[in-house]
Each structure stands twice: as C-alpha cells, then as structure tokens.
Length: 468
Image 1 (cartoon, rainbow, N blue to C red):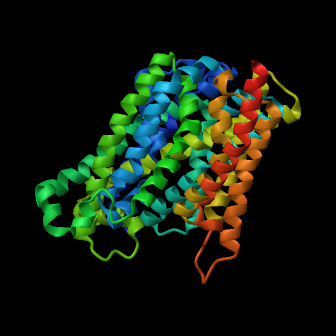
Image 2: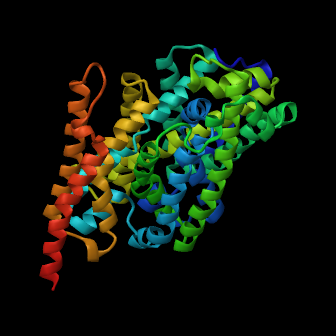
C-alpha cells in the first residue's frame, strides 16, 4: 500500500460515499423524458456546467503525477496548454452551433447531417472514444493503493459504484455528483500544498533542488514531441463531454462562458498538480513507480485527516471522469445502437435502453481495464485509432458549406480509422529490433488524419462544384 489511511481517514471516505449515494438518489426525476434523462432537460446553469465540465474532463490524475514527476514543468505545457487552446476554439467557434442543433448525442447530429450509416459508424467511434476504461483502471489502482486488495476487485468495486449512482437519475445525477467532486479535487490538492509550501518553500526550493531541465517548458523533449500533443489535444473538438454539456446548457451563452471559466479552473488545477509533482521529485527521488507519486507524497507529507482529504481529492478527480464517460457511452449505446436496432423511438424505451447501456458500458470498461492495465496505453490506442475517423465529419456537420455527401462521409470516416489501424498494427506486430516502428516513421494518428483529409478534399470540391 502506498497510502495508509487511519480510522479517521476512513470515516471521511465513508461520509463521501454516503454523500454520493444521497445525491444520486436525490437526483432521480419523476419524468422519464429523453431530454430529462440524457441532457437534464437542457436546463444546466453556469455553476453546474463549470463544475461538471472541469471535473469530468480532468480524470488522469495519476498520469499527471507520473509525468510531472518525470518531466517537471513540461506537464503544464503538454497536458495543459494544448487543451486550453482547443477548448477555447470550441467555445468561440462551436459552442453556439452545437447548442443550436437541439440533438441529444453526437451520432444523432451525424444522422441529421449525413444519414443513418454515418450515424451508426459514428456511434461506434464515440463509444470507443468515450470509453471509461482508462479511468476505471486508475480508480482501481487508487483503491488498491489504500487497501492492498487485488486490482480486479478494486476495478469492479469502483465501476459498480458508478453504475449504481448513474442508474438512479441519469445526467442529473452526474451533475450533482460532479459539483461535490469539483470541490473535493481542489480542496484535496490545496490541503497538500498547504503542508508542503510552509515546510519547504516554493520557487526557490525547486530551483535549488531540481536540474534546470525539470523547470524548462520542454522537459527535455523535442519541439516535434510537443507538437504531437497539440494534435492529440484536438480530441477536445470531438470530445463527447464537451458536446454533452453544451447540449445540456440552458443557453448558448452558458455553454460559451462555462467553457471559458473551465479553462481558468484547469489552469489553476494544473499549477497545483505540477507543483505537487515537483515536490514529489525532490522529496522522493528514485521512486520505483512514478504513477504513484501523489499517493507516496501524501503518505510522507500529510498527517491523518489531511491525508484522508487528499485521498478523496484524487478519488473524486478520477470518479467524476469515470462517471461522465460511463454515462455518455451508455447514452450512445441506448439511443444510437440499441434503440435503432429495436426500432423504438419513445422516451420510455430510450431511458430503459440507456440504463441497459450503463450495464454494457461498465462491463466493457472493466474488461478493457483488466485486459490492458496501462492507462497510457489505453489513452494512446483510443486517441490514435478513433479520432481521425470522427474529427472532420463531425466538425463539418455543423455547416453545410463544408459538408460532403453521405457516402463520401462514411468513406472518409472508414478510411481515417482504417489507415490509423493498419499503421498501428504494422508497427506493433512487426517491430524493428524490439522497438515499435510505424510505416515511413509516421505516427498512426497522422496517417489516419491525412487519409481522411485526402478523401475529404476531392469530395468537397465535387460538392462545391455541384452547388454552383
């Protein structure tokens, strides 16, 4: 165990779990309408929007601890700045368009723009992109760090709790839970820094005890490496979380302001987590498992109760994302896969199908977490394979000016995913001297995006000529 909790700490954990159950039950609505269950009646106000988006989009806390421990300040410029940029682009250029569609899911938007085939393929891609498997794994790893129980049991317990809470009230449950978890994630790291800063200092302490490369924005990486993360951050533009919360906002203005406020909160939280990672590097040199940097630092620096609060902060950060992605995936399974297959359209059936989707999504997440027990690997595979197939079709669906024909859209989606998958499999199955080498030295994601663009451009030109 990396983090030993006292009886007082466990009491805090029990209170937190009880609060989650109460909030989940309290969120249960008497109405069974689709808009109620999936987008909380499109009534999300600014505080709820910000709390939900901030906490749901920031789940990789153990990965952040690992990266900041190994590469220092670069954490902010790799996992922070690129996402601020694309979140800002979404707020300025997409939020009003997305909100104005009045759809419930991304595949439904693709159906409106490009027909049922693009919608079905899009639903598969959204299901893959929004898989909660990486966060179910992190949740299990964190529980294992304080209990010492087998990882499989910890993953099952965490995923089961999310399933129970979301089944009660749907998206309304998610927002209420996120508001509590938003508070805890900031309070947890504020408590940690409140003990570390007075004891050791801040900027002077880091400059005195860390090599200069740890305080450089690049962290010793090349410019090409940093640019790769800007491409990966395009995930934001097709993020099911961003679309779901925007569709749930009471007004387009709430969505725009909410995203911009969220960027500010992410910036503050990144500063807190990066500082914690730097403290861990100085105080715990030679840590065998850098992914456990934050739990190990808390074990050394915090007394009882403070340790429990910090553990809850980490747990809330991960759980909020697990819950959010579980629900979005479930809505995709229910509305865009099961309902069309059953040829049902009424609200009661949709709510029931979404609840079945919760069970399906949770099962897939647990299986993925146990079969590929590496958060970084899960992130890489998901982003590399599926973003290229969804990026252009979804962005162009919001304006007819850039749209292409339904058949060409399905081809662009299939080609993007196919090129990424082929490149990934070739590099993985036929390594060079034990090292993964992709065809022509090109990352699979680049190959997929390029292929999608090559299909898109001539078809868009053809569509533009026909419009004239």
